[in-house]
Image (cartoon, rainbow, N blue to C red; front, side, top):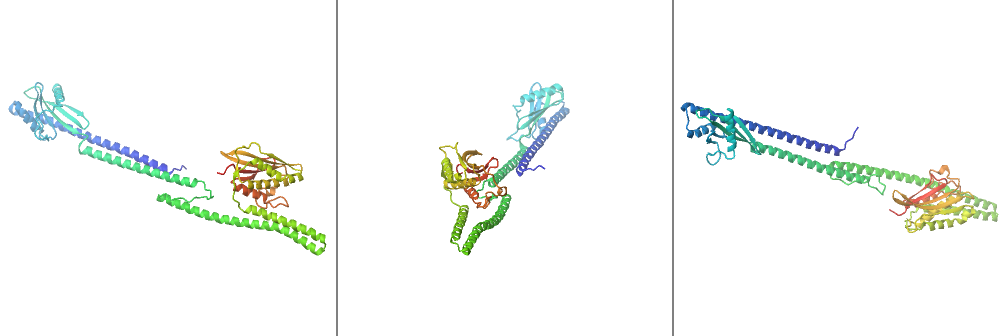
Length: 486
């Protein structure tokens, strides 16, 4: 099923509104054009009736007297046009031109007695045509605001060459109809533009609010929250959604807090059990040695028992020191650090152990830039390398090799420092592989399992990571750190 966004639906509504406005304007123009056509047709009929009225009046006067004086023709025309407002006309002689003219309904300051000069040639031409064809002829001449309607009719009488004519005007772009059309079109334009502006403003605000919500939801959150607390947008519907998301985020934070608390409690329980186990064994050994020394009464045996007790005390002290290193968060003291001398120093601290176990330490730190050093805490990285080296030396058989290397790599455009410690030992015990960096995870009977856990905490403090390289042919630990803090 296809899903459409609210933005697309509102845009479709805006397009439909615009289309309906165009169609309405077209229909309004058609109605107006039709009404003006009706006006022109009615005016044409009125002009034709006026022309026939002049013919009838002229025929009646000629029938009564047999002839008619030229001075009486104006009265005939005026009487014929008196009942037709807006119509002017007269009688035209093919020989003498206009011999009678009247405009009885003229709305000027006085009676109009002069033939319209602008239309004189048109009147003469149309009258000549009517006289030539022997029947009435008409002419419609449109302009921007009106249509000129003119009709000429031959006059039958004793004097040849006479025609009657009548003229009127239909105002197509003027008057009440045109005013109503302009008012309707203006109202339609205003409503369409207003609606379009409102919809555009709404779409802009809607898109802006959605973009702000998307940016707030997708912004990185260093505090690890799944949902940020969103600000109100000022839109009631959006604010209800914002409040629901904020409430969901609050519930999620509470749930995560309870989960973290439960995980911490469980971790404390596991840690306490492991510590108790690690401490109980030395205590049991010391107790056994002390009891045997007391029962035997042999001073040499008591001396040996005391040495054993001191050894177990040293073991417990080492365990507690490692626990403190694991649990006490120390602030980083970052500084540009030359890596190659650091590797040489760390390897030198373990030369005696390597010689005693007949293991060779190989340093590989070529390719590092001389003028650009990574920003790290030298003391803590040295501690991490010491733990990794000690772990490698303790798991490498005689004649084996431990490699200590460093390189600079670019990952997604960011520079990284990669420290590598590998050995030719038997590899990682499968039983502890999944929990390799957890406290007390160890494959040696004399190990505490805290060395790799300390390395992990140091890496995390540097915003890096430590991992076992699964693709290496030898047992290899990678300490991956940012070259410079972001």
